[in-house]
Amino acid sequence: MTPDPATPLWRAAQVFRLLSCIYAFGFQLAVNPDLEHPVGGWVLFAVLIGWSAACATAYLQGFGRRPAWVLAEIVVVVALMLSTEFVASDQWALDNQSWPTTLWATNATISAAILSGPVSGMLAGLVVVAASAALKGYVSIDLGRNATVVIELAVGLAVGMAAQTARRAHAELERAARLSASLEERERLSRQVHDGAIQVLALVARRGREIGGDTAQLAELAGEQERALRRLVSANDAEPRKGAMSDIGAMLRRRATDRVSISVPADPVLLDATVADELLAAVTNALDNVEAHAGPVARAYVLLEDLGATVTVTVRDDGVGIPEGRLDEAVTEGRVGVSKSIVGRMDWLGGRAELSTGPGMGTEWELTVSR
Image 1 (tube, one colour):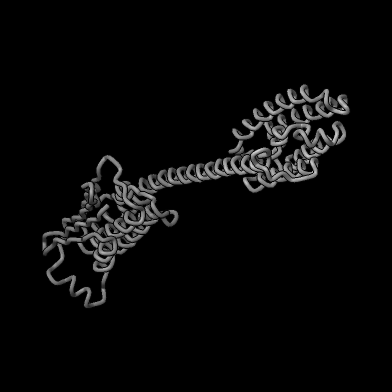
Image 2 (tube, helix red, strand yellow; image 1 turned 30 degrees about the horizontal axis):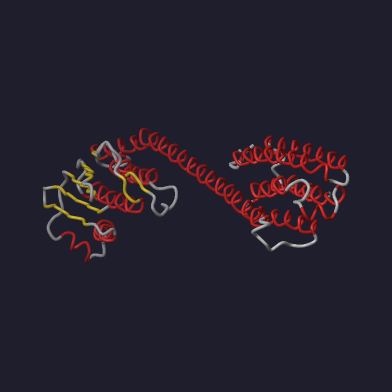
């Protein structure tokens, strides 16, 4: 059974119920000699105490926290209020509050507010006010002498909003707990995949390139599957929420292979989730270029630096490098991977991408974003 986030309010309400019963008992002792039917007054008071005990038990145990029970409480409260006509004279009803006391009648308002929120609480309060008005035969607009309307509405509104807030906070907490559990499970699966299938594919790709011949085609296929699997385990389960933060260091660690070395700070490097995703995509594209163009034995080195106001990722390889003018030729040929996937992403983020390369010098990308 799902716990009720409003349970503390239900418990506090029963403390109020106990105090209201004590007050009603004192009121009964004070006014009983003035009633037309004192014995009937005590009989009705016994009903009041019995019903109060039943309600307290039902709400504390939980089985009474449903509309039917709260509706029954409102009916009983109204019935006891109107029973004043059977135990007291009309003049007594005009000169005093309704027999069970307005304070005790407020229990129905509180129960409705906790169960269903401020609107239901205020409506229950209006029912109590209406019963009091029917008993007296008029509606008092003198709030200085009769503040019952204000009290009932205020209690219904305040308690109802408190219950509503408690349930919303509980729902947010549960959602956060589910998200945390999902992320932990994903991290566990990512580690298992990295330690198993990805490492095997990386080994097949490397050994296939070393052997050459027909095996090179198998190596290329294994390399493609390795990269695809890495993207899969690195991808977000859902679109990042506005304001959410991601640890770019943890995201980069998943890119480590036998040919890619990753160096990141020991502490998390937090960036806006969208920025982190785009930066990772730029790094991934740079590593894919190393895989495809730097040479069969080239290694890549990724360094993450947290400089406070900015975050820089350097991707360097020891491959053949890019000949001068080759990138311009690629754009002319319609191959815009570097200009769009790397430079374009960094421009969109308001950062910068700096390239250092040359024949036989390897390639180095320095990707910088501002916090």
